[in-house]
Length: 484
Image: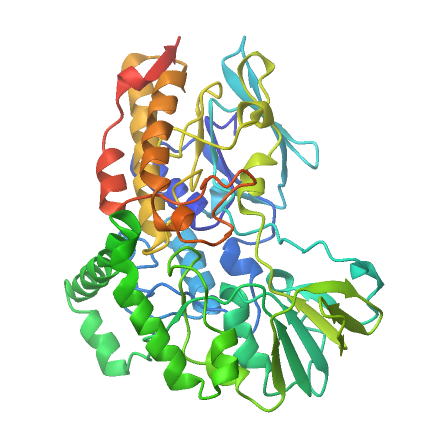
């Protein structure tokens, strides 16, 4: 096999989708470089107890590969991982994937008008185009706490769960109360001797409308059009939630009432309830769905600490009041380096421009897909394409379609490469800022992982997902410089 025309980095939801759609569009000269030994991305790596999707499964899947056989409304991790593996097999992607191929650097060659992709093992590829599908939730983030290295027992991040550490009868400390912790805390609480949960900011939690699909329901969903109809219903139900995000924060009030009702129903103790009541507008941070997290915190053997951890010792954690909490195991549920994952890539564009320099004032891209100075480099789930209200797989499909339109534009014009014009990128991002700044993520009174160090939201798409779909339906040739 000669040089591939296209290199895709990553074999998670985005990379697999890109590969399938390239094949369907008649592009067969591509490879997918995957750092691990199997596909699945986030859904391969996160194996913590209780790991499941927080978007209904029938929406958290490809529109072209519906799965009528999901066991539950919110599928567990193994099922999503197996679904992705089945897509790789069904669409004939296996010959295109190279496993154990961690990308070290991407460098644009101005003379050859091509990319040089180097892997950690020293392999070199020279494709015409590169698609970065590395995802956002894969580099675990650890808090800066004095003495973190001195802890004597097992200590691990939820995304790299240590299954050899038996938590039975142990004193377990959990740092963080984000989307992952909310799922594993209820699962490990019954076995632990004592569980101490350290909460910096209380999350807003909605009840999780989860249930198992009966064999009869699954048979019904196999009827022509049935799974498609269910998906459409879920899509519009989720999309309606965007009004409070995308239009006016005041429209979040019903969501707030639902969350407070849920809290009151599940936490009878007024003191604990106060500690679990957020002090910021709902939606400012990710709204979490769970019906078993609050009950877990009311158990005899579980305590909630709202004072930050200031020091970690050999067998304990010390909070801001000086209280020492003994622990045999620490689990970090402290999330991921989201914007860093994109910004830390070793990518050099035209005239030696480093990605870090292009993004010195913050990461940004045209439609979240293309960045000026980096021809034929496309980001999937790039800046400002995340969602707080619907399935990100929908966004991936819109982006993949857009990238294929870009490739078709190259074929039509016989150009070697296309590079987004800085003024098109600027205008796009000015519109984004104007929309984002008055909305709940900035105006809601919280600090979330959506915001960068300057307090600018670099993560979330500020509107309805169908707006993004409409804007990326066609490529505007005028937004790009064609390089021949």
